[in-house]
Amino acid sequence: AHQETKYIENNGFNPHWDETLQFQLHVPQLALVRFVVEDYDKTSRNDFVGQFTLAFANIKPGYRHIHLLSKDGTGIPPSSLFVHIRITEPPGPKQD
Image (cartoon, rainbow, N blue to C red):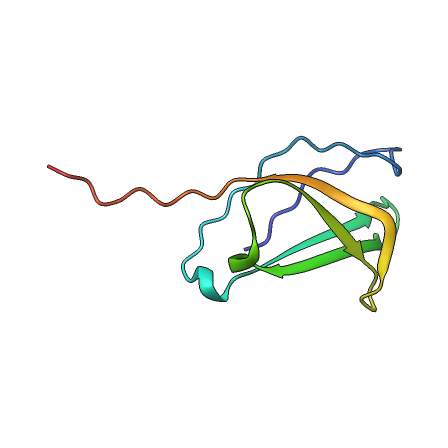
């Protein structure tokens, strides 16, 4: 699944999204989560800023810093995303 946040206008150094994204995973053992940051541009293609990909199985709940990497995989200090992750189990079958 692919989801995007809204873009933050004129705030390239400390954007704050305050959004919640939800995903339903059918095979969590095979799922990857990718965070991508782009510089939004109305008139041309968005510019890549940084990204980080990790296996869902390695994600821990709570507040975390996601340190962004360049396209070639090198770090981009001090670029990071501060995220809150919550993992919930889907509801079980209804009991009569």
